[in-house]
Image 1 (tube, rainbow, N blue to C red):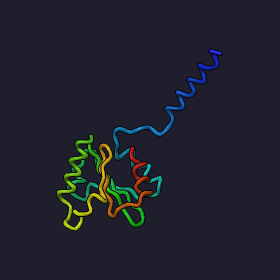
Image 2: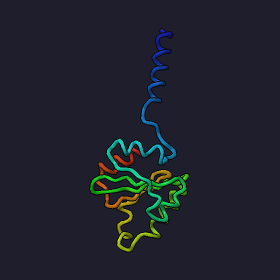
Image 3: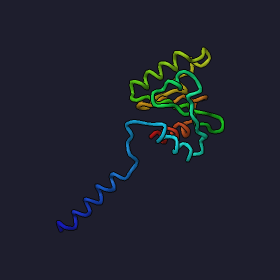
Image 4: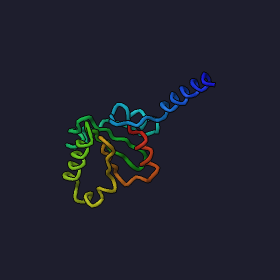
Length: 130
């Protein structure tokens, strides 16, 4: 009886490690392929402005019909907070009242959409952060 349970326990432990891993640090390199697989047109965003060009770990823009999201990557969550402050500082007067609708951060990444994303689009993009 003891011999049979050992392989079963080993299989359960092995299977538990095969799910979607929890990512503590997101990057351009790991996020881009997932977005492309979902049909987004992805390109470098460093030319878009001072915030994107100064993002410590790079920035990308992912486009789909009707919307686009710029994802700027910091080295850690503190740098992500700095990126958010930069977006607030340089936002146009027209955008400022709506910035919380189109911007959010996840760990070291800051996401800023052109228009408020529907829930399914938000979930797709967040699911690609790696």
